Image 1: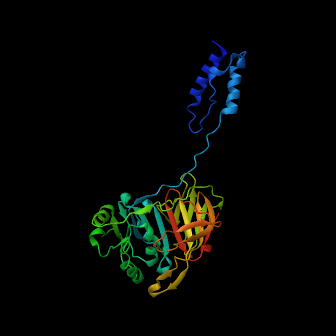
Image 2: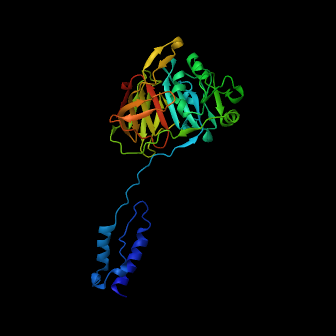
Image 3: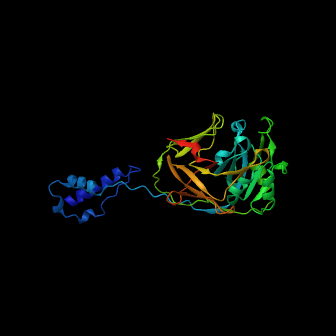
Length: 345
């Protein structure tokens, strides 16, 4: 056997052995063994040659660049969900939401609006609670339909003159909602996948673009933020988000209640309360933008948000004006009058 034949055989064995290395992919020189003259590997130097070849031509394949999510049109359904201390232990379905908005309501507690893909609607969702104007205004461009149980006067007036999305007050659609008698009122008003489908099947819903945010992933250079605390000045309402590297998401705790959601992106918007009216109902300014805190991949970035009109989506940017990526996974948006109530480490 000639030296070149021996080298070819060794290369074949070498290629077979490294083929099972998995994530580390080896790239060999494409120079054909038959092109190697015998004089290049004289006197048993084939092994030395292969060692040299390994050092010079084997490399770790770089990680692929994560591209922006590809948007499609689909039907998205938003549901108002209670978030009081008494309701949190019985919240259902929130983990399947594509995006969650959390705003303060009267009494200083927060309420949620959860956005679901109609095609992947949870088996059960709730407790369903009443609509406030700023929930309707903030999630309008993302929604094909919005479900709730009751409304404030300004929300009712806004809904009456809004063509799309379609709004469904569960107190007027009793067949499509139900009370769970094992849970005390008023924290027991729910709906489910079949009831929602029965309701929507009779309607003409618009389709919306989702994902609504398609900025490509990029390296984040913010400060480390593996634990995020939000101060609501009440132990039962204070929130904490803890980054989990293995899932690249955050666990979410409110008071002593551990939430079922694991958002991949957590955003805090500074949204001023411009007035407080009857029964403590608030008016919020959603059109002038403001400060933003953005948490993703265990990093914190400061920036700004804007919403040019009620019909347009939020835009999120860092302090240089560069759009911030949302990527895959659940997005959780918290509105506060002052982002100074958030700390991290």
